[in-house]
Amino acid sequence: MKTSLKDEFLSTLDGKKAEEILRRCVHCGFCNATCPTYQELSDERDGPRGRIYLIKQMLENGEATEKTRTHLDRCLTCRSCETTCPSGVEYSQLLDIGKQHIEKHVPRSFSDRILRYGVTRILPNASWNKVMFRLARQFTFLMPDTFREQIPTEQPLKSYPSATKTNRTMIAFRGCVQQTATPNTVKAAKAVLSHLGIELIEVAQEGCCGAVNLHLSEHERAVQQAKRNIDAWWRYLEHGAEAIVMSASGCGVTIKEYPQLLVESPYYRERALVIAGKAKDLSDILLAEDLTQLPLKTNKERVAVHCPCTLQHGMKNKETYYEVLRRLGVEQTRTTEDHLCCGSAGTYSLFQPELSQQLLKRKMKALSEGDPEGIVTANIGCQLHLGSKAQVPVKHWIELIAERLEN
Image (cartoon, rainbow, N blue to C red; front, side, top):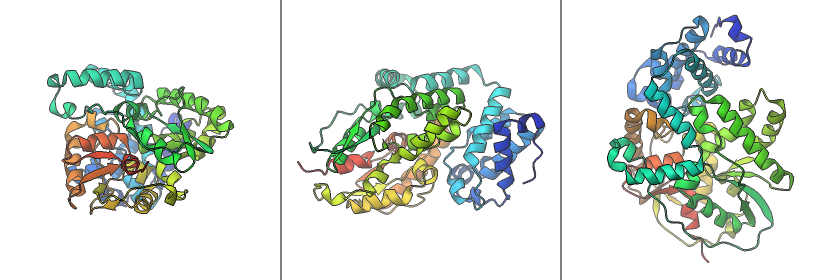
């Protein structure tokens, strides 16, 4: 793709990166075939190729409009297009650059700014979102249906059989929403890994991975959150912690991309490269272990397996995920359109409720084809989103495994 970006923009790191990404695009349109929003809306501007043209035009002539922002806002950043693209276009990075640019030039409405401010201050803070969820459960009658359905019910803490002797240590990343909305996920991971000789430890000083702020173009806040986490984990890694274990793939893909986020901070970027190598999805950890050590009861519950976009398109971990479940004897039902997003996409379900619900309805139909008794997934956002409409229980896959552990 030929480009003629403005000189003042080309002199920046973002400008150089945008030009590099744009020039890889060959206009083929394969991306549209796997784009959820293009499938739903059939509008070229709501597919990756159209959005690339919109961003290119904006960066070339400097004109940013509300219409352009509308089409960029509708993108889920699911990265299905990146998996499909034969030219290796890093679309999600280009979108981030485009969204940051437009935020500076096209002011949002007052109500939109207030909502985005609240989301970026409350959701990434575990203490605050815990309070928010409790209050929301008390006042659901004041909320629109789509918001009401997103409020997670309070989970009673469960106890899983654990082994007492471990000889290895890894860090359990708790996340912000996951530790308050589904606290049993990390408890289940701890129990399962204990039987493999691995102790999962929690680091009190860590915070949100930064994904929420990145989704909403709060770039500097995300940078600060990344630096805080690197500082919190570093001494544990120096003292022998083997990995940072991710049980939420949305957090996992963000942390693995800390080197890109911190490209302008040489000290932290160097450490971020180490962190990215140590950050492992939970399925990665289990696949490398002898799973015959797990004392699992036989269970013939048939479940539909949902693979989050962040796991299959962001972390490229789809095959590992399914292989671990196969080795653990999980009986999987037939599903279709596994590559399409469920419509959660971080905060997308809050800011694009209508389109998010359309995608959720389509995903539930695809997951229900084999008449499952339950649904498992690997990301907190997907879990809550699917659970708002599912007629069967929806849980994290590690909870399913932990429930099968014998004393």
